[in-house]
Image (cartoon, rainbow, N blue to C red; front, side):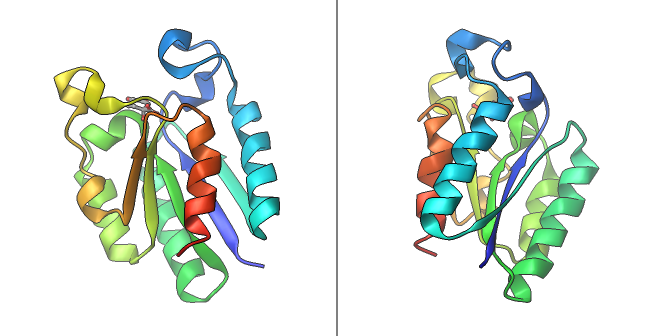
Length: 147
Ligand code: DQA
């Protein structure tokens, strides 16, 4: 059974109480439960993580790339939070790790502030999803199954 890495960046630990009009009322624990169901339905093991630290995301992307290269992982779903719009290091990590990665956003970043319209992740990602709310995580797991 291959592992799906679902990696979450800064402030996503606050889901449920953080700007509920934008991100909804479900918590990160709810999202993890949703991902567990979706992974079980698609025959994946789930490795679900969250960190507020950019370098830790870099480490995890490298780890996922090694797991994919060894055949034990299918790829990564990454919600990099605000690092999406700032991080050359994450762009380089995705390219360097050679990992199949879906960039995910809960909100439709293109309908929000201009500073959210550019993503350093998108040019290195295999696919991009935004605006499906937390249900997007389940949809992204289904998309991983097509890789
Ligand atoms: C987000 C969108 C980002 O712009 C923001 O900084 C986040 C969450 C989303 O899931 O919609 O932290 O990635």
